[in-house]
Every structure is written in C-alpha cells, then in structure tokens.
Length: 595
Image (cartoon, rainbow, N blue to C red; front, side):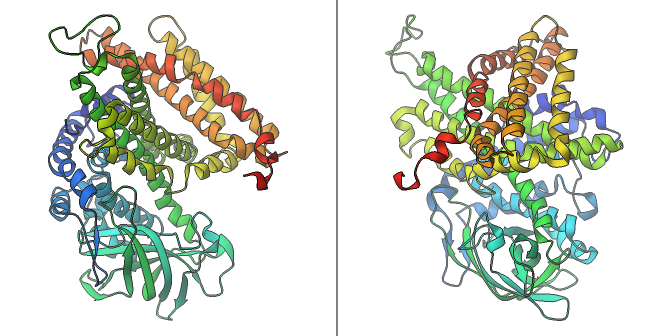
C-alpha cells in the first residue's frame, strides 16, 4: 500500500481539539474555515499521493548527480514535480499575502508539510528550506531585500538554503572561518567553504538564495562576531531579472545513508557578492529564526517518516500470513493467520499509533501557539504562546525524531526479513529518518538547550506557566467517566516532570555535569508529559463527539489508542525520573583512558 495522508487525523485536531474557527476574527484565520481547510487538505493529500510519493523510491535509488560544471541533476521526475508544486501554489500556502502568499495559519501549513515529508522527505526539503530562507529575510531583511527576494522565495520560483557548517566546525559556530570583506558600495565579498548544505545546488528552481554565516574582517571572535549574508547563485537586478552568475559553486556532493534525492552539497565561496542581513555581528539572532523553524520541521520529519513506516507495516501485517494465533486460528481456511494476530506485532503497531497521534497533536498545538504569538490581540496571550514556542522546540525536535526513528525500526521489525531487503519501503524510511536525530542540532544539543537555556529563560516563566496550565486542566476535568484515566495519567506525568525540574534546579548549578547527564532523560520525560496532555485533550474531544451521538468508529478507536499510551508507554516516565536523579557520578568518574 502506498502512503495515504491522514486527513481525518488532521481535521480532528484542527476542528475538535484545537477548534481553530474560534480565532476567525484574527488575521490569517478568517479564511481557515473547516470546509476550506478540509478542501485544501484533500487536494494536498491527492497531490502528495499521486505526484510525490511515487518519486520517493526513485529518488532513493537514483540520488542526485554532481556534474563537472558544478551543477547538480536531481532524480528523474523531480523537476516536473517541483514545477507542479509551484504551479499549484503550495509553497505560498502559509506565506504573508503581502509577498504573494495565501496567508493561512502555520498550523494548517504544518498539516500539508507533514504530507509532503511522509510522501517524499528528500523532495520536501527543497521547498522547506526555501520557506526558512523566506522567514529569515522577512524577520531581518531591509525593505529593499524583502521586495527583491520574498515574492520569488514565497512562490518557490527561487530556492533557498542556510549555510552554517564548515569542515572544522558544526555545532560550535564560533569557530567558523568564512570571511566577509566590505567593498564600499554596501556589498561584501564572501570567501570560504561550507559543507552539508541541503539543496545547495539543484536544477529545480531558476535561482538559489543562500543565507551564509560569515565573519566580517575585524569582528569579535566567537559567536559575537558572526554576521548573516544573502548570497544568491545568480545576482538579481533590482527588478528581479537574473543577472550574472555569482562566485559560488557546489564542488561536490556527500554520499549519505539516506535522503538521496536531496542534494547535500559542499559549497565554495570565492569572493562571492553578498548583502548583509540585519546588523553586523548579529547574524546568529536572525539565523535562529530559520533554525528554530527548521528544528520544528525536523521534528515533523521524524513524525512523518514514522507515519509512512507505520502505514507500510500495518498493511504488511494485515496481509502477511505466518503462524497461528495463540488463542486459535483466525484464518481457518488459509494456511496461516495474518501476523496481525500476534501480540508483539500489535504492540509495535499500537506503540507507533500512540506516539504518532500524540506527537502530531503536540506539533499542531505548538504551531497554533506560534500563530497566536503573532496575531492574538492580548499581550499576555501572545507572550505565553511565544514562551511555549521557545520551550517546546527542542522537546519536539528531540523527542519526535528519537521516537520517529524507533517507529521506523519497529516497522522494519514487523516486516521481518522482508524489511531488510530493498523490495519493501521499510529500509528507506529507516535510513531517511536517521538524519533527523543529527541535523539542525543533534538531539543531545537539543536536550542541553532545553535544560541549560529554555528552562531558566525569563526566570523559568515558560515551564512554570505550562505546569500551571496542566494543573488548571486537571482541576477542571477530574471527574468520573471515560476522561478520568487520562486526567489522572496527566497529573502523574506532570508531577514527575515537576519533580525532575526541581531536582535540576537544586543540583544542576552545583554540578553542571549532573544537569547535562540528566538532559536527555529530562527531554524525553517532557515529551511524554506533553503527549499525556495532548491525549487528555484528544480524549475529551472524542468523548464529546460520542456523547453527541456520533457513532463514527474513529472516536472509539482514538480512545483505545489513548489507553494504550497510558498503559504501555507513559510508565516510562518513572524510569526517566529515576535516571535523572542518579546524577553524573558513574558517567564522569569512569577513567577516560578506559574507554
């Protein structure tokens, strides 16, 4: 079975859980009626199933080709698919109408992005990175830069990248050596090498707008001296017509484990023309707009690959005949029962469903916070949503990619030996998803960011507010009935997370190694708590539908998967808390020479 977008899941979240029509009076939401959003999602599902999904295996097997003239040829069919994407207006779905977009909320755009990433992760990275470049210039560019670059980026006519990593430095950007020399006419000459640049060169768009981190001569050392520059492949004239080729070239492609259909480039800048974005030495602040968007996008990639892998595994489990049910044959007329009858197969599939459905809700909830942080009329509400965006970004990136990869691994296990061959898609999902734990900041870095920065930001305001929101929900929904187990499970998870947070406050300052040693478990405990909250919200919505007489099996199934989350996945919170409290003793006292 090929990938089918989970439109029903998306509509349930947007209508029943998040109730986005309540914000119809706010910019962007007026056109996001349920009927309109439903039509958009149905069309997006059709596009991704018919256009992008069939190219997924093709791109994996063929990969991108670097040519001797420093150009890159994408896999067969990618150019036609990209043209259809642009002509359909899909890149502009969530873009400000001032720059040619449709202006729909980011939470709606997220649903479409999930579809494209599940259908073809390597392809979806090209427009995804372009949108990130659009966001960075929108946030930090001059009026002239916005007018020149944003309409073309918004439509997808031009592509975009971000150039951070260099051969000698990845996470530690303070070590970067790419230099920028002012010419005197407002431009700079950019010289240096960048590696692992996704979409750095390709044949899909007529121009590629590189956002490059570089150090202006004489700038302070470390991250305090980093500036951001627009360095286009072709230098556009003020009217947007492309001019001469810039002195930037792809000098090679990386050979990778997965995402073969995306060109991962080594980029060489040889006094290329560049334009400063924002102020000198303030480049990281602007680039982080793009990076934070990318980190949420990577969390979405973890979820999306897990969803595609789950769908393939569930279809295989329904069709594959092997063994008999322990409680008697379920397919007595056949030679064996479908492997779906076996408890361990069901465990892996229900684990996937519980994580994916809860994780999707967590992503959508956070994306809605991002929307409201920009357009809500109440200052306090905007601030709370902005706080949540900062707090949840590392959690979503780290937790959903870890669990997404685990889901892909379980999907391969469901396939058995067939999954280890290239005749089935399980291998590609596993290989493609593995990078999500690494790029845009490894998950270890995300955990350190959460514990070392996000918790303490503004005196702990964000996490304190989140705890208060959960407490209020528990207090208001603690009665009897079908919601009770979900509320009790949420209260218990929140108590464990709060216990861990207090432990970090008491022990982290005294011994920073203890905070770092606890960080990964803390991130996962936070992720579990976030999913517990989402499952309570989804259970409440499903129970309300059932109480209104809606007999659609979707709602009963939703409650069943939620109970699996409570019974079989959420208990891991206790193990995470126990590991957090062990500190760094055994980790850091082991002699270095003994490794």
